[in-house]
Length: 364
Image 1 (tube, one colour):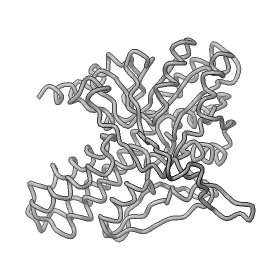
Image 2: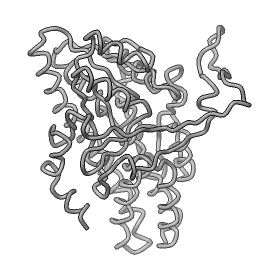
Image 3: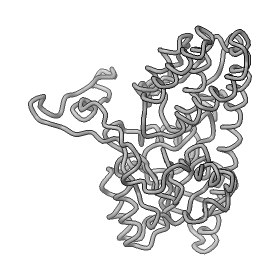
Image 4: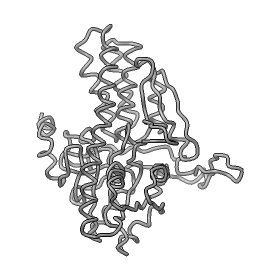
């Protein structure tokens, strides 16, 4: 995607893999700044603090963190220790573990002195593969939007939750990739953007859509059901942090409520995600997916601009009041119309037809 007319990705390697550049997403949408990180611990911290966010992106960030760790210490013991530490950074998003394990699995057969070069090569390949997968997701998703437009012959109103745009991936995005490609194809679209409290990822979605000229409107999280009742939503389109083998979907907290409202109002509910977000080892998402509980201060404070234009945090909840901050919820497969992947679109129960090799891995 472009920022101020300049093609930009969310993460990139520097100095032959000796450092990594990222966009600091904690400063968006108020300031656009880049960081250069040369230590794996700094990149792990960026994952935890959500300087990089979105399941596909943190998967690639973990790939580069593992690569930097191998540069520092390529022994078996060190690699397995760092692997465990990285996986613990964000436990719900399976892409993180997938990325780390891709590196570990591929470099372990090499001698320690050869492992860093092998890791850099693979990390570059996985980074580019993420871009290609996201583009393919967008192409398949745009066809779904086009089908709705062909029946409606009016702008397609799409409700989204959290951010599933290029900021959540290396480039293009997942759910928003479909929107961008449909928009490029001349299909008239309008996006209802949930603010997505408490981290306000919806503001990043709005920032992206504004930059691309896509019509959109930001709404409070609880407005979605009302809009569906009044037939102002043609489809719900979200990303995912983990999808089970039977199609249960973990995504940003509040997604389940959107799916319930969509089911009640016969609004199609689609999930867009790469195959790296599918966890073939589990079936029941409600009982098997670990839900990350984050710091309560994310609820206690709201970030914005003060009257002088400075970014500031405002306390809105007393420190004496208890808060609970689960970051994700699970939408059961029965509420999902279709899952959009790099290989196409299918109902949740047919995931194994698109990815028979994944199903075989899950049975081991």
